[in-house]
Length: 219
Image 1 (cartoon, rainbow, N blue to C red):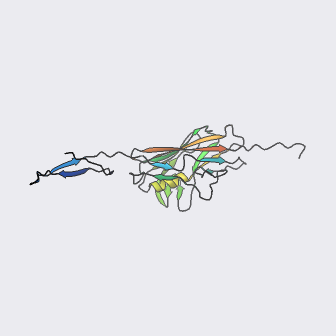
Image 2 (cartoon, rainbow, N blue to C red):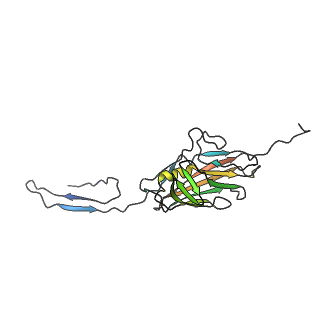
């Protein structure tokens, strides 16, 4: 006869015993051990890659807008549902040792474009270059202007998928041009779980022009 083994989906080893019976007596049990080599699963970012944020025309004051917006959002302001990106990872309890890298990968203007982390009550906050979630330190950040990507390096076990999700929802974009030479941007979020898995999602930005019509004869 044949014995079929079906794995139950976990990443630990299995063992089982087989005995044969001749109709009268059982044989001695034979134990078979199955050794499994775990493979890290990449994190997943949902509800972000299809987003398009419309950035308002520059009015003289630099204005930051959240990149994670719902499909119905106008001029970069999320609808009543707010930012809705979701982060999951089936086999990483935390992202300690990993990172979130956010960079403008299309049409970046280093002199006018910038990225930053929004401080939120009870959520993501920063002090100096240290990043916190719900009051617990999760890592440090650098960059966000010129040609430097905004990079948050996770250094604590408090950097869970929930914390990474809140961080993604807190990333903001700004452009200081009244009349942009190029009106579109692509901003890439790359999330590394610290265990060898990473994933990316791109957000599109449409920048409105601040060019005003000319006045004729003072009217």
